[in-house]
Image (cartoon, rainbow, N blue to C red; front, side, top):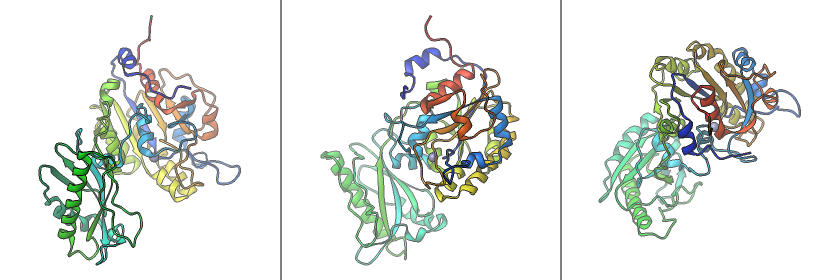
Length: 409
Ligand code: ZN
């Protein structure tokens, strides 16, 4: 099995434009497991009339997100769904967070995720999340941080959610090869920023950031809980090739969570403002922008969250919510719809797993249907698409949308 994507130059030669519309609907962590030795998975337990109709008219299969046996993070798993080699492009946590809040990235930038933290009078960490202060309470504190200046570099700080923020340094001669300051436990002081490579750039950036942290403690000193900061996930612009150029599409992303908005933005999709965050709201957002784009990435997070909670029934209910809203999407008359997850998050495991992920391809003009009529793991294992690497889903979707020519004479 070939796990690497189609080469750019081959894809470029095959692309042919048309007016079809493709939807990639991702239910995060969709794949599941029975809670006991036998029985249904979350998806099989869920009552999904609309998805089952698509399954009956379409073709089922499974995809392997990254490689057999490798449990993926959502970042690399989405890159693979978008058809990028997830081992070639490594998006740092800081870069995902920065893109997620709309902070643009350029080569040479250094970004990191930040936490407000509570320090005692000896400078030891008492609470790594500053009592989980709210977004509202954090906002004026982020403004204070944004006032801090450093010599010869531009510093930007943006709030994320609750106690989290993002910092970006922009200037000449910086390096992101730096060690996290978050000690990951309480009772000891935060680590200083230290270079992870022996270069003048890394040493200089570490010095600048240590100076910034010192200033941050000064401007936050009077706050009872958020009187310190922790930085981690130093990263830079991953320089991902453009999704729109690679596939000849105008792509829009409909996603609530910053991380998925971030990964979509990093591949150059337009990230849309949501009507609301329910499945109905996500599909209504697609309806509102339907004429402007020909590719829609729609992301639903709750399936993964309930899987991580270990709540089998809540995960099944989350799947049912998407199913009930699905007619809003299908009324738009898309040409190709792919329904899948980025990875499995079985409630039984309370974590991401390496198991193959259910895949549904619905394309009435070109489908070679199989004899499966219910969307679930067992049916998908016997489906007509077989078990394929995730990076091949995009070319399949393009082909079914009539957007790929013959290769060779
Ligand atoms: Zn995920």
